[in-house]
Length: 388
Ligand SMILES: Cc1cc2nc3c(=O)[nH]c(=O)nc-3n(C[C@H](O)[C@H](O)[C@H](O)COP(=O)(O)OP(=O)(O)OC[C@H]3O[C@@H](n4cnc5c(N)ncnc54)[C@H](O)[C@@H]3O)c2cc1C
Image 1 (cartoon, protein in one colour):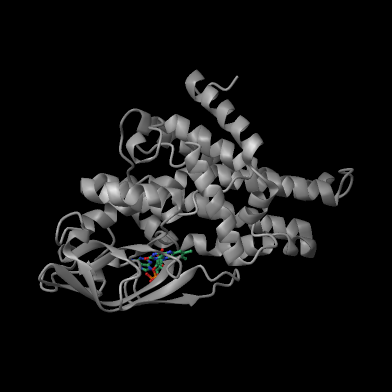
Image 2: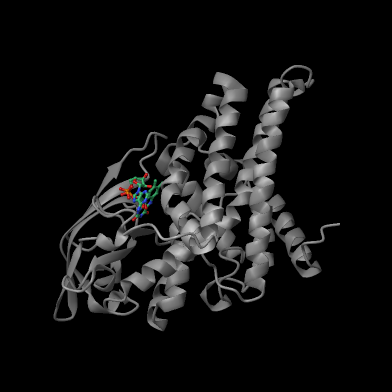
């Protein structure tokens, strides 16, 4: 008996499983694993799959119905994500848009901004990127220097962002700019919704050690952005940033299902390598490592359940999202390293090489391990604050 899932959510899970059985193809599964296709081909397969999902009512299930979601409860959202991961189905093609920027537009955007942006974002018709980090502003985001000066009914933007995921592909950017250079650094920032086709924007791709070119540095040279694209209040961008990052870290809690799907994949690959279970899988050292990975993932699932039950009771995500982020990055890194160790060189052609390289970035993206440890020490454990 699955005690943690109420009957309505269990029925929803069966519905989603049935739909996935009928609609998820091997082409989409392979694209999710980065097999065979070149990057652009893979992206287009994922974009088509995303539109199929959204048209069937399985986009961002927790979003309000009027913006393309289905108003699902946190538990229903959790069973949906688990069913998707277990089937090997990729999530939103517009991951940053749907998990971070969309919820921020829902929280602080105007009705016009919500009506204009949310549906095309959800369907993957318009791809979004997030322009926060700069060459000299990463962990210390508030020291960002990209400037926007109000000139009539436009902002004029000049500066540079970096590590912008999907920057070269994006149609829109949630961009953080300094609008008041004289104010204290957290109080002079604004957030803008910027059309990436505006003259003066150039995205230069960066290739990662995982072999993909998913990042860009984005340059802004006297870019004229309508004043109506301000998201939230003028000089109120810090609040938008913390809201957006709060959604990002809270969203990590959903990712336990993806790591579990990777562990299941490792088990299947080990079975294929050692079908009788007499050598590799009988080795106590191998069993010990698999058990440790299982326990780490089970810990992540319990963190997810705690977050879901908090959300069911109307709580807002708090600093404990940093714990999920930290444990998730460590679990994924340990799992991919275990996979490559146990499967040997044979594993390297089959997505694991990409996974093991990509997993290194998890302790940097969305707030580094050190920053998350500081948040946990100060705001969860109540330890003395780090000297400024
Ligand atoms: C996969 C990936 C995707 C990303 N996508 C985006 C994106 O779409 N948009 C975007 O804007 N950015 C993105 N980033 C950038 C990311 O947010 C930054 O890399 C991150 O915030 C760290 O900033 P930094 O790289 O400038 O490192 P720095 O902040 O310079 O840190 C360097 C090192 O110093 C440590 N450090 C810094 N400050 C402290 C402190 N106070 N106490 C202890 N240690 C400290 C850090 O932990 C780190 O180890 C992405 C990064 C990755 C890896």
